[in-house]
Amino acid sequence: MKTLCLNALLAAVGLTSVAAALANPYVSVGTADAYAPMQMLKVGDRMVTPPPDPVGTAVPEAEGQTLRNQVLATMKQRFDAAADPSTHLLSLADAKRSGLGYIADHFREIDRSGSGYVSFDDLTRFLKAKKGAAFANS
Image 1 (tube, one colour):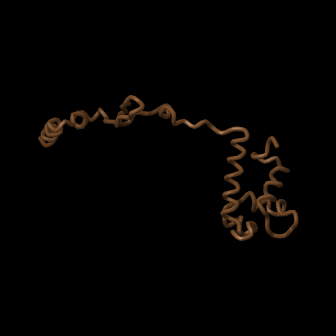
Image 2 (cartoon, helix red, strand yellow):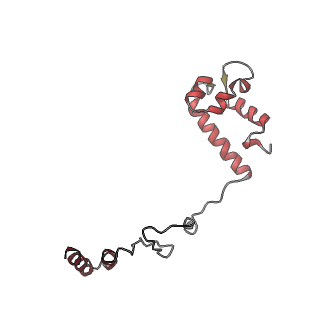
């Protein structure tokens, strides 16, 4: 009886889609998107593939020089966050503490001078010599 009264109240107010959803548990109510037709899913439906991006919002994957620049920018950001802010040098302890495991594992190879600190230039020089992912074509 309560469901019937609620459905009647919602229908009277103009919320017929909500009233229909309450009356039929197998119908789901979605939100309307201005750019795409409304798609309904039932509880238990499986999506084989994710829905497509709305028109104009898809960003192409970076490749080539753009990807290389993104990788270097990310490396530089993480390096700077871990390094001493006044000297911009990274110690072995800083690398370990910041989760820069690759740098920590190869610290002695990167620190060719044996000073106990490495700069970002030392790191890029090491990666170029190793032909790291950001330097595969350089």
